[in-house]
Length: 408
Image 1 (cartoon, rainbow, N blue to C red):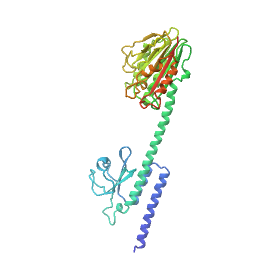
Image 2 (image 1 turned 60 degrees about the vertical axis):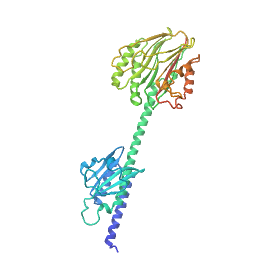
Image 3 (image 1 turned 120 degrees about the vertical axis):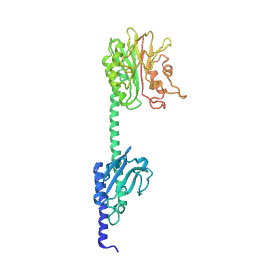
Image 4 (image 1 turned 180 degrees about the horizontal axis):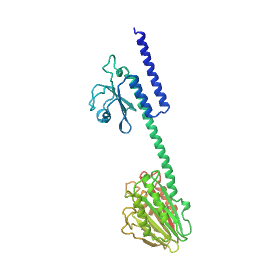
């Protein structure tokens, strides 16, 4: 029969293990930092149980050394994917790790995937009695799993917090960007010119921009632009571009000068990494002169309701920011003789697909504006027919439209 001392020792160690598990659990529930949890874990195993050496490799996107207690520093460079992924159960014995001193490897799983590997070396293995590693192996495995899963949960929680913070920042950025896009209620609506727009960013923020500015009693400026690329960087560049354009665009500035100044600003701000396609126009409803420059943008469609003639206002120079200096900028002028409609758009619209996979180009625009109805009604019906913004599977980019009735 077991003597009283042996029973008392066994009772003492069992109580210690339960107390240790309770302490670790309470520490986890108290949301203590990862460093504190690892310190408690190492103290329990090395100081209280006499385990000599502990090394933890954990997967957090990549495999990294989470804890090294007692092993040489160079042990932290194990090629986990090559050496260890075949280990699915507690491993005893030698394995080619490039170094010696590891007696047992304990894999830790989460959702049936390797989450960590615990390396154990026992400095008391040559002493009398059973090795501490073997004596407490079940306990080591249990407390290791608890600690590793808890640390992974902390990482995922912090990651979710960071993602939520980023989401909030994107929502705020989206709200701020939408403030830069003029609301239809702010657009000119008078007996000579009526302007309307449609804006849908594919992501929370986008690189499309359109604007309409009352420059004088008779002159109205409007533009549409598209930054190469998507996301936050495109949105920031476009926000800066909007501020620059509004500061520079006046009733009497030459459009060639405007484009060259904008080019210099974008070259500095984008540092050659992005460029902007731009269509900018100024319409004088008294003289009925429409002057414009197309800087590598999709050609707007101009439709004369009296003659049925359709024009595409094509590119006249390279995009803004493509070159340090634009070699040639050519302004064009058109006299609007009859009630006409102009539709400016970004490639998020023109690159939508038909069922056969071909781009719609300007076909849908021409189809919908070839009548005497107000262009606002035309655009509203076109958007509905194309299933924008949410019911068209070929939508992959920001979609923006600015359209105007130029009335005789």
